[in-house]
Length: 352
Ligand SMILES: [Zn+2]
Image (cartoon, rainbow, N blue to C red):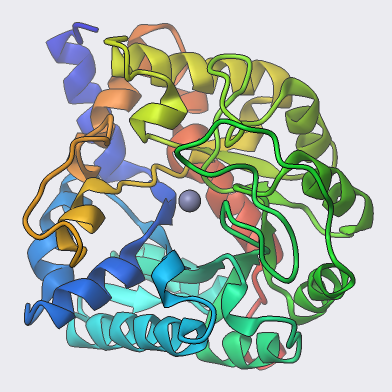
């Protein structure tokens, strides 16, 4: 898609003057690898400039565990990642802060610091030990998905990333208990990566709005990581949201399709099915993560449609150029997630 210069300028301006939120980034895991690789301040080196260029106000960092860290090393690996993330925020506290509650989020917005909200991508690290959720909460974890694409003690993932096959089976008894305990604590529940049976079950038992932090539309591109129109309607009906994933295989642009055009089609379709207030960003940038992974030393793979956060205004410009109003675009790039987190986060630490 060719973007007109005047629209690109308008988009850049919007990013500096409105809220911009990315609801999914494997930041904690990447920082952990980079610290292992003896980098001194990877958050500043690899992220600060691009986040500022994209005008980001809030990033939701996952704690994601690889198969080779499970099951025995899972809890330790998760704690290691949280520790490294907290250290990185402390090291750069003029620029970043950990968000524990809605008050802290508003403060970050008004001070111009980039908020980082911590959540678990899969609860493999607690096994069946639901009481450990409280410990995660105390550490600052404010949300979780029951599982990544794999099966664990709580639920089944939707598929193996390299294998397109439907996986059936709902939540275990402990999975149901985990949902209840998360709601009691005040954690949000992410359903990206959950299989279809699990999602149906969770929709029945959850009393608070669910979100799919980084999933797209199955109608626009068929992938089990994406949601059907019916699933999207169900999420919207109970106040949930979804975040636009920018990874090429989830977007559906590995066959030469224009990435910006495909991203816009997902946003527009989701907005038509769920309403414009239910759509946000969950870009899932992964090239920088894989570059840091020990198993791919120095190998740079290119899967991110938007390259890095500094390129997110291109998506904004593309949406504007295709006719979305400025008011609606602002909702998609940040206002919708801000409204959601205002509602679900504890008001202040005292009430937590
Ligand atoms: Zn994911």
